[in-house]
Length: 183
Image 1 (cartoon, rainbow, N blue to C red):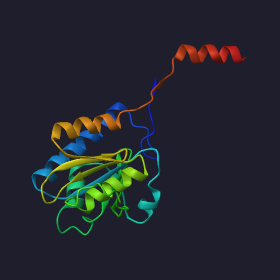
Image 2: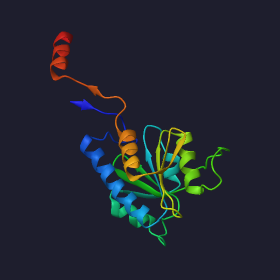
Image 3: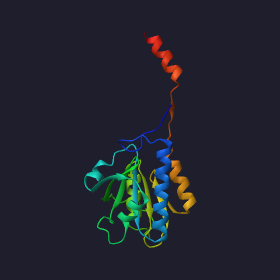
Image 4: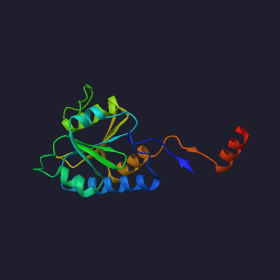
């Protein structure tokens, strides 16, 4: 049996769940990019984003591309701010993040990109950004903004960041042997 790193405060994703998260996110990102709909999607990992969740609109729904597209739809009362994902669920929307104060950040980048970098500087979260003006897609992670990625680069980076960094494998026989030794 394999055990994988915690993603979000409450969920250890199986390989199947992680694949579904990537699939749903990529479908939403492709739609938002094509239609130039701005979005900020933040995936919590081990550092809690509870302060942002508390100050935003609670959703607690399964992650689906159609729900993300609806949240960011122009005119939606929830389109401003970011969505927070914990595990394979959308926890909240309308989250307002502190923006990066990095002086080397291009002046052409807007609030969404600055907020994405800001949350990536203060936590281990993965922040996905779709530009409303250009349709460009970016990922902020580990205090870095990876700007203007292709869909393939975006997908590969997302898969890499969602992959467990530490896998611990337990052998059933080893566990049985150690239990016998303890007796």
